[in-house]
Figure 1 (cartoon, helix red, strand yellow):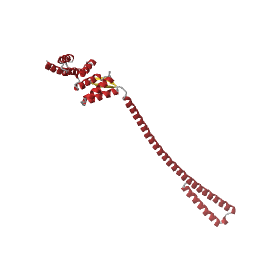
Figure 2: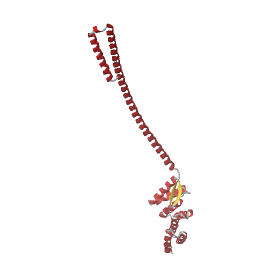
Figure 3: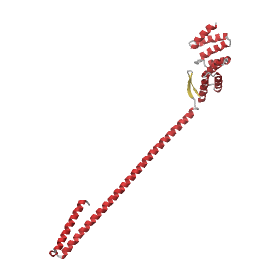
Figure 4: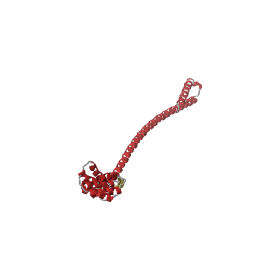
Length: 255
């Protein structure tokens, strides 16, 4: 019930009571039955109004309780929503961590496999497939050679050729082995390995140098005739090479 309606009822009651008092003051003007009837009617109106007021108060209290309950439920829902958001963020972090671990594991497996899988390499203008260990051993031997450690280099290249006799590195390994032996004044073995290079791959980029190195070894062995023959063969086989230019000068000095 609205406040305006309640005020209207109260006003009606006040008017009724005033009428009742006036009626009592002039009771002589009415019959007793009519007086009792009027009083009963006024009481009924009063009781009805009181009931309406009590009902309105109960409804207001109930409304307040409902509002409090609704507010409490809203706060609970907010709390649950925040908790769910926190869980979602945690799940997202855990998922990202799992994905990162999977990626790391996959990369680790690929790295381990790559250590055993053959790969394409290019040395001295030649491309071929080599095992990881094969590639590592050749590069290690070459690193020793470049340091000027000719004894260890000779050993490293000799072992390499024994372990990988059909390697794509073979021609290059023979070239560097011959150079290490030349530096050690092991000319006869150097000649053997330089000739093995030419026999293995006459079109190899190192072949002209190997032939020139054979002539140098023959000079050191006092085999002048053999050196001249080797230099002449070099000019015929590789006339456009840099080694051929050097060979011409050597021939001129040997005559």
